[in-house]
Image (cartoon, rainbow over all chains, first blue to last red; front, top):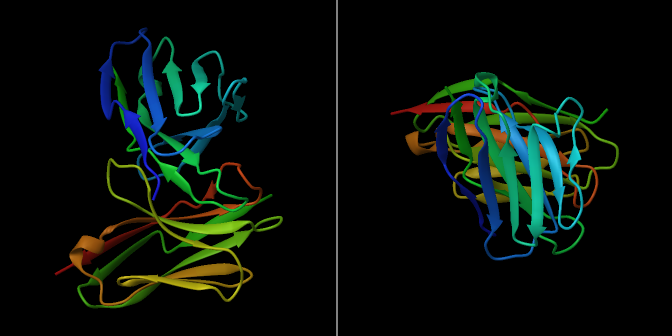
Length: 117
Length: 110
């Protein structure tokens, strides 16, 4: 299957600082990537859809000024958590779907565990 | 509203004890049903895609089936390494984000 690489796998930051998470599709071009957040023992909650060359589409309740998404190329999307606070601590996962037709599975990165202290 | 419900939330099995996980869905135009495996602290790992009722797919000890209202993930003679959370998701449009259920956490003891 296709490979999606996410970095870093974990990060600890101080409250008030910003953290950038990278998501790369290694063997295919992804015009669309997705960012999810997952709390312990909960399912994946879609935060935003990242579109190459245009603005991201955010889900209701997700602050777009706090969670900045940039999709500058067909293989890279970044999520920046700005002015992080302890309540932003969570597991963040990116995903991409191969553009091989209308019905394709999504592949996921390894996830990033963010801890804000 | 499109929705995915998985049951049970948790399942404990003895090694070799076969069972099934359920995924019920309501979606306006199913474009695919997906099963993923997620280990603690990792991203979901793709297992299967099913597109139409009656379709079945197998991989080692796992077999996924699909009807018009639900999907089953059958686990035959499970081993401890099958312990994980199994996620079900559906797609209602090409190229959009998948809609996930809450998952079933499977524990297999030897």
